[in-house]
Image (cartoon, rainbow, N blue to C red; front, side):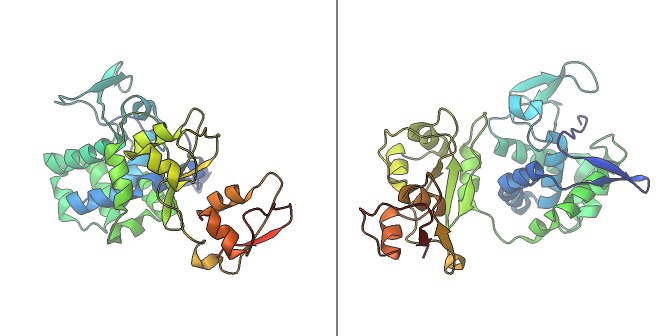
Length: 300
């Protein structure tokens, strides 16, 4: 297995051992792939915490060359592989690594790789809640040469509370569908809010391009966002993936939004995932009312 990448984790000496700091980019990776890890746990009986921790370590939170070139999150080398490949220096120069159509395929092949290999068979007698046993077993079976490999997995699992996913009863099937359909490339990270899903527009995005990635109709996507299908998207703009709600979540009942410079009723409605006409209705405002900086708006 390839050398570990620690591009975004910082290690500090502490009583002779390494201490890990919490890192936002690692948390973003977890948010993006936790449902895939849970889905794999349900299918293959591998702890979701172990899958996520290995993905974090092996891919540098999804920012390794192997992820960028071939969606390979776990550094699995070819070893009889008949699919697509990428080459990169590791223990030796120009070594062969597996390449995948999508990140989901990398996660699924990682599960299959462990489940079908004789050397890891004993691990499947452990409970999916025994992440420490799995971490030590992977190291003992030779998954990685780093002598601290098991400890690093355990540290990650404890720091980010990944063990909570080992008892998950279900996973988000919408996100799994997206992961299965996603092709090689830097995908939009899907976020969840107000019972809906959204992505943040990047340079060059259009409703057509985002709809193609999400395997949906660009006309519907524009309609969900109360826009024309040919409208241009600005960098940083929220694009909702399903029809917006009539109000903000219940815990926003006592909250107010205070209008800032540059905001419009539409941009505020987009921020909270509320249909524009209902934001006017909640606040007893005419659709022709021109909001001003400092105005306070109810959200439900």
